[in-house]
Picture 1 (tube, helix red, strand yellow):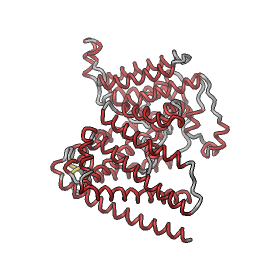
Picture 2 (tube, rainbow, N blue to C red; picture 1 turned 90 degrees about the horizontal axis):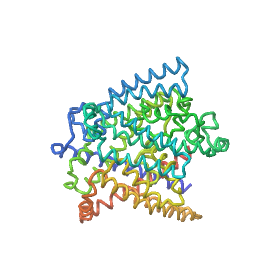
Picture 3 (cartoon, one colour; picture 1 turned 30 degrees about the horizontal axis):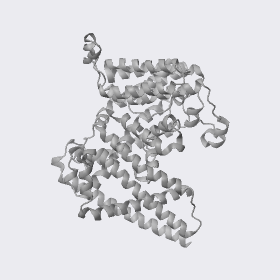
Picture 4 (cartoon, rainbow, N blue to C red; picture 1 turned 60 degrees about the horizontal axis):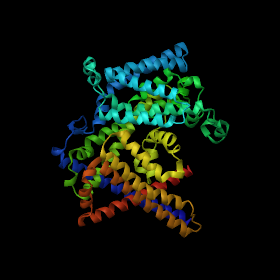
Amino acid sequence: MGSFSWKQLELGLVLLYAASFYAVFFQRSLHLSHDYVGRLYGLRKGWIAGRLNDISDPQWRSFRDNLPILTVVMGTFVTIANFLRYQYGLKGRGMSLLWTIISLCYLVYLHGACVLFILAIGSANYFISKTFVESRYYMGILWGFNVAFLVLNRVYEGYPFSLFGQRLAFLDNFRGTFRWHICFNFVVLRMISYGWDYYAAFNRRPFDLKRHMQRCEACSSGKTCYHALQEKGLHIEKYSFCMYMCYLIYAPLYISGPILSFNAFAAQLEMPQKSYSLVRICFYGLRWCLAFFLMELLTHFFFYNAFAKSGLWWQLSPFQVFIVAYGVINFMWLKFFLIWRFFRFWSLVNGVETPENMPRCISNCHDLETFWKSWHASYNRWLVRYMYIPLGGSKRKLLNIWVIFTFVAIWHDLEWKLVAWAWLTCIFLIPEIVVKSIAKTFKATSALGEFFSYELGAMSGAVTISCLMIANLVGYVAGPSHIKLLISRMMEKEARFTLAAIFFTFYVAVKLMFHIGDIRQKV
């Protein structure tokens, strides 16, 4: 009973501290945004209380400005596809042809004549997959081809048509409204997924579906979970060119995902998902609308990203730098939350379920592994299936992370600051991996042991969050060229108390996460 009472008291104190922290944080954020408003870039007239709106992030600005037309396109495509599906009883082959035609119209609007590049590279990948599937060098050829184009597309910035002769130069006047090589990063992931899944089906790799159904709650209830759709494979005839091309350019998921494997996509085009009822899909859309309004409040009252873009962080106090960094990472989380869930909603309405990106709030992750599993979750699943496991899985984990995170950085963009961010993340991840492996061999057998284990977990979580903040400061605020300046500012005498207070705040936050986890287990 005493132990239970102490936990109640601790939870009360932790909640009180959290409420006080956010009260101070938002109050300081308001003052900071007000004091520097005249020196910030990327602000424009807003619609809430006559305030300016922070649209300094180009990705968010583009999505927000194009949201009305995206909504119209979504409604039109959904109506056409579902009407024809039910009118003519279309299944996998018919739906793949229909969505290929619809998606091509969508891509022509987005990229104009540059659709030719997408079709040419995609067709070449299909040819490689079919031709070399029996070769012992198949995986090397598949990966080499895709990584080469991932890099070349960025180096040549989408290839001017004039590069292939003056007769084609006139096509440079018809490049559409959206740069094709930016979206092509997701196409690369799909091309690798198709190549890998086709190889597995060709070689008939076994999957024990009966054993899986005994363990899986969703599958045992009559539904089919994503893991089963992904692993059980398809008949070799399903790996057709039409289905492949439909998978590459499928309109709802084309721009930004979420990412799903070829097997899962083709299976759901044949038989639409049953995990989400119509009511649940409607509730999903309503929740998205509420999250969008929250983002509008955030960008109208707090100009975190504008501070990062304007390069004013070096003029701020250490605590103000923390405010900007913490604000930016939460802005990034909410931005991707909205973008990914909009396109996932579109896909769900069409009967294709994808893994959920952002399944948990960024402020509820106390270790790097959980953070990455909960950020771009569908990409994490892709990396695990097509990179982590083939590279040796947990047996070579300390080496695998360097290859995987370097690929992640290059996949995002060819920028040194992203490579620096990736390698910093690896450096911070290694101690966590080592500590976790050691912790598995020890188990507390007394109340004192449990107490020390609990406190050690909270402190190590605080260290992890601190490292994550540093990595994101370098990646999104200061940049790798200002690392020395950032460190020197944080090592100043006046910054020591601030750093200690921030670390203590993270320590308290981890304890709150532990309590949330305990409550979830009981429920």
